[in-house]
Amino acid sequence: MKTNRRNVVKCMGLGALGAFAPAPAFSSSPKKSTFSYCLNTSTIRGQQPGLLRYIEIAAEAGYDGIEVWVDDVKKFLSEGHSTEALKQLFRQHGLRVENAIGFAPWMASDESKSKAGFRQMEEEMNMLAEIGCYRVAAPGIGAEAPVDLMAAGRKYKALLDLGRKTGVMPQLEFWGAFAPFHHLGQILMVAAVANDPDVRLLPDVYHLYRGGSGFDGLKLIRGQAIEIFHMNDYPASIPREKQQDRDRVYPGDGVAPLSQILRDLREMGGDKVLSLELFNPSYWERDPLEVAKTGLLKMKNAVKASS
Image (cartoon, rainbow, N blue to C red; front, top):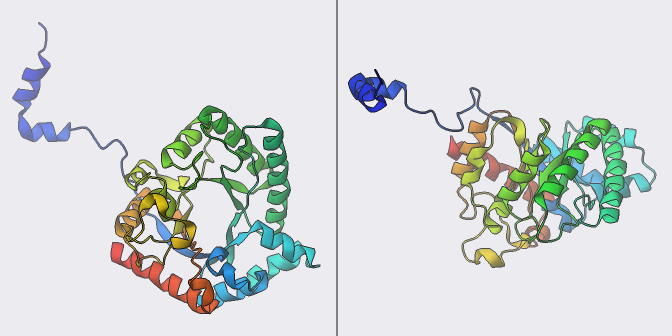
């Protein structure tokens, strides 16, 4: 005799049905994320204090780590300092070098440019490994619209292989105002095509908003796929499509749904570094230590408010 599924469910009753209800597509991680705090030196870049002063300011302000720019590291080394001496400076100030910001055109559609970008990435990765920095940003430099996301995924896979070789892992990044590679959906596809357990994504509050990604897509991501998250906020007074990097404000001083964002990050599981990344010229007119301290306080207040 055939079993009628509808009748079986009906006979089981509503109480029993609850036990067989489908689970959420992306179940919560058993252990929630923990947050640490980092200063991206762009936040006080306009004052041009130099790498040594960046380090001193980050430590004095109370950050756990620092996010350096590759060009600043190169400049410091060109002045006669060694990579070992720089590594010791970070240690002496109690800072982890969480990530580095670089601009190698590894995703260029032109293969000769892409190969040059890979060579640049390898050189910079080796340098970063020597100073104790084990991550590097990998934005879609050189990409042209429309991006072949399948090809970009294969290139990112090759970049991850290079990361394992050098010990410095590339964090796949998108920029909201960069038409070729501006959306969370694009980096999710590139990550899926790479099909690699070491995939890491580098989102940003401003870029999620500016590029039209929104924030609910963060709910699709779990675990250590995000290790670094760029913290900032944006004003309501400027239309989304006209906002620029310079318009970013301290976390909590704009209208971003920070509590939702931070709750979603917390639910992912895995350790997360919240890195303050601002380019606001009005902040560059202020004392850099004051700016760093204010930014850290506002990040901590945002985390507290999300709990």
